[in-house]
Length: 421
Image (cartoon, rainbow, N blue to C red; front, side, top):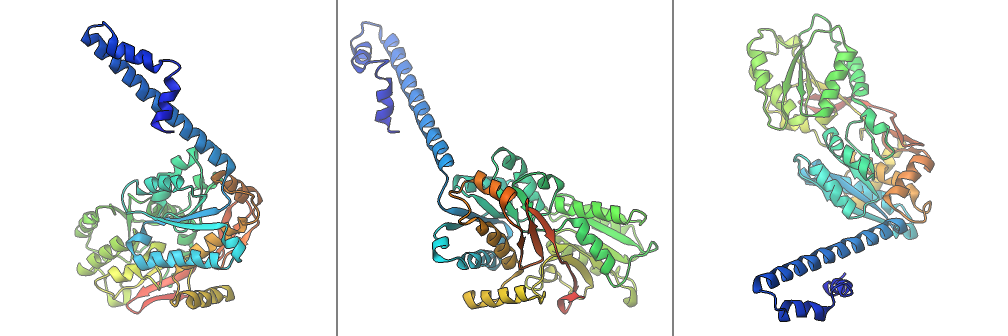
């Protein structure tokens, strides 16, 4: 609404000539005239803004009710911005999914990218940005902390979020709009403990290092205590955000024994710093019985071996379990790799498969809805959408129930990352 239009609205209440008479021809003292002008100015300003707000509100409501003829899917994350080629692989997976539509269907889809920095509440502000951009569904958000940051806000104004690497939480499953494609920490850890070549014994010295400021890492620690209730652990906490591992140094200074196993419930950088610290203190024991490091899915992959890259000494024996692997030789994965190479002249990364699967699933709503809004998209996928068998190790069932169909045990050594069958 223009300023002139706002003024016209108050003319029936205060005719312009009468205002001029009050202001210019009144016999009131100058101080009183000034008060009158101040009152009138404030009145005009307030009414103008009320009119503007009311107009904007009705326009917004009308837009929400009408919906859009295009499905807008927004891609987001922080790691994807920190590592550019990782972000490119993320976007390419989504592009490949859209590319498989016919031309008429392609015209009904819009992909938009909204990356954010690794800062407190950055995910929350980016969520609001995507709302303002009228995103109907969101693929991404990098960590469990990110999902916890946006959880309450999503409850007030829901948008369907399909997180690729954020850790699941029982609270998320109770909603109709927040899901992660990852298995829970207890599932991955149980498989790790079952499949490592040398099993942990009660007599072993076991150190557990946990990033307490990461909800997903606390979940790993809690799962370990439940899975091995009779095992004696030396627990130590670190703060990942500040890279402070002084607490590990203090534990090592008061212990003369070598650690048989060290659980590294931190992301790859801090995990590597702790590993190097233990190496430097020569607490590995005898060569035939050196420390085994056990980590999380955040150690990376063969395509992005983050933990190994950060290590100063690559002479390490470490294991972790993750969901997807390009080493998965099923036909769907091999076909995907072939299509990706043909289109982008490059090899995909695991995140390419994940973004492809998430976007491919969301694209199943094309031609199923007359128009798109955040509400109609949530309703469709929660109530009506059929199941989806992903290229990777994910299965999505009706009601947005997501399961992992296969996990992979990875070994880390100076040779790199390899799958242990």
